Image (cartoon, rainbow, N blue to C red; front, top):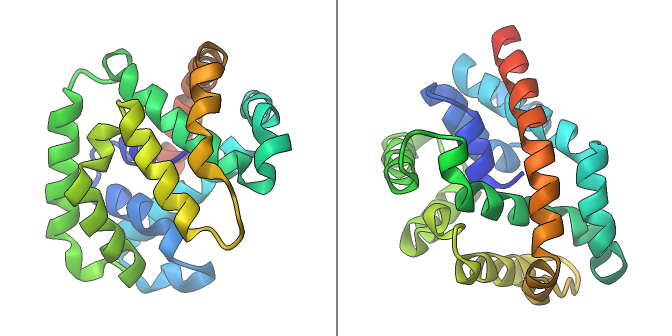
Length: 194
C-alpha cells in the first residue's frame, strides 16, 4: 500500500498516523528513537506491508506487471491500489477525501519536528502537488509514477505503467476491492493488539 492507504488505515490516532507516514524513512530498530505511539505507527506500517506483499490477491495484480517491471511490480500495484481507494473513497469513509487529506496535511505539518529528512522532503512534494487527493485522478497517479521512476536505483520504466492501469483497469480494481476489506480487518485486529 502507498501513502493514502497507510494514512487511512491508521485511523484517528495521531501517533499511528505519523508513524505510518514516516515508516519507510525509518530503518531497522531506529523506530525506538520515537515516542511509543509513533513506534506503534511504524510497526503497524511494517505489518501492513508484510500482509500486503504476501497476499495472493495482490500477487495476482503483481503478476500482470512482473514481466515488464520486474521488482517494481509491487511498488506500482501499491500506487494503483491507492488510486482505487481514492476513486472509491465513499465506500470506505464518511469523510470527504478532500477533508481527510487537508486534515492529514495539517497533522503532518504539526509534527514536522519529528519527521526524518526524507519524509520532510516528501511532505513538501506532497503538499505542492496535493498528492493524496490527486491519487483519485489518472494524471495524479501518472505524476507519482514518474516521480518514483526518477528516484529508482535502476531503470524501472514505471512512468509507462499508467498504460497498464488503463488497459487492465477493471481487473486491478476488482482485485483491490476483494483485497482491501481483508486488509482493513487485519489492521483492526493489529491495532487492538498494539
